[in-house]
Image (cartoon, rainbow, N blue to C red):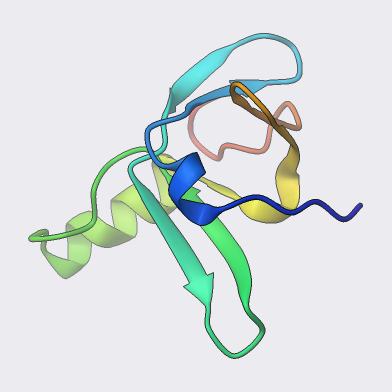
Length: 86
């Protein structure tokens, strides 16, 4: 699957599973600068948090971008993609 969109468009978008469950709103976008790819979307901000809190957010309040099925009016991810949220 190949899709393109402006990264700035994704900020603040709602994230839903393909089953219709609301997971949260995009707060941070993690990039692999060498590959030029989005790696992960978080539903809580990562700025000004401790290392432990950042780990919790990445574990419990984020989705891998490879789980994203669609980015239109909302972000749709494969059900079960959000660890700790299902």
